[in-house]
Length: 225
Length: 225
Image (cartoon, rainbow over all chains, first blue to last red; front, top):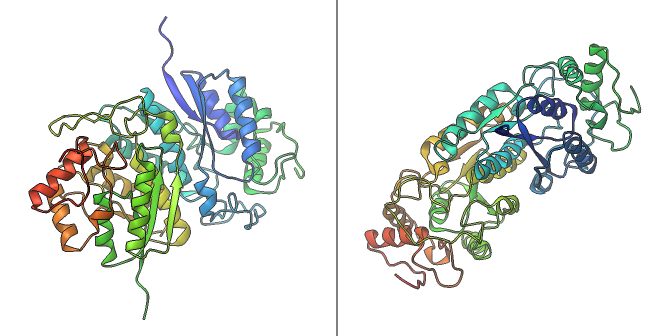
């Protein structure tokens, strides 16, 4: 019996990457890639990453460090002197939690790994609809990135980025995850805290709204729910 | 008097980045970015980077480390178990010195810095003509990357990558550098050695041919010339 094709899945440890892994798991043998870039909740995210990798019995896992993104700062996620604001889901424009050009760093790490190992599929749990307002989470960004891959990797590499959730609302992500038995209890989404989720940052607010609209209870503990 | 506009220049320490800096220097105040990714000659390149930054009196300089690219290997530049082959300038295909998707890592580091500081211009000394055969040194790659910048950075960031040498032959790069008094004696291009250039790797061979065709003496010491 031929083995399944391998896909690299970028797993932060949040609910979106968890559901993305649940989707990729249906068709591929998964290799997990986690990136630590000096974000406030780095250690907590790593813990969720490990728990998800264990849950899905992923042997092939890799952790990359980019201390540089914290060194240059410019985001409330990486610069401790910038406060994480209370959620405002009606806000227009790019939020202060945006880490400049972060997704291109993450994808580049995955692409280099894919190119060395001959892997063709890379999954990332980015969400455009009903989300954060980050420029590098939009479908147009991933289309441009896939175009870049065609000219920027070895001829015939065939590497492509898959974003199964990019057009999903958070509610739909919760429903999809529930349908696939995704282990939401192992994930972490809060931007700010590492013990009990704050319930007040953008990330908590979007997550809580998604669970509420889906009529499913979020298994994580919150300060404010 | 208004100051000059700032440009970030990616400076490896080789002849191409040296001439690129000489070009950028005509119009911009330069900020230098150097990347260590575990390449064999990392320490020697860093020495050239520092010498070039001193020569051009660049105060704003930054060094980024990406140990990850050495960890995954796959190139004779980062994996010590793969021998650096003798030059073969007629070879077709991607050479073993290609570091998978490296330039996207380098550019991403520059873009994140540019986005945090409001800089709009990034210079990189990539060469397509008469060069190494790396997919991520082609004009088509940089065109696709500039397209990615339009959708992947904050709206209105205006960040753009400039590749003044992408269509130059090595001979023309030497002539351009000579015309601008570029300090070739401070640079390092050899893939393999850090004291006396080997004269036999692809990078040395391309450099030596460029100087020879330009009728200018390469100031570096070589084992074989």
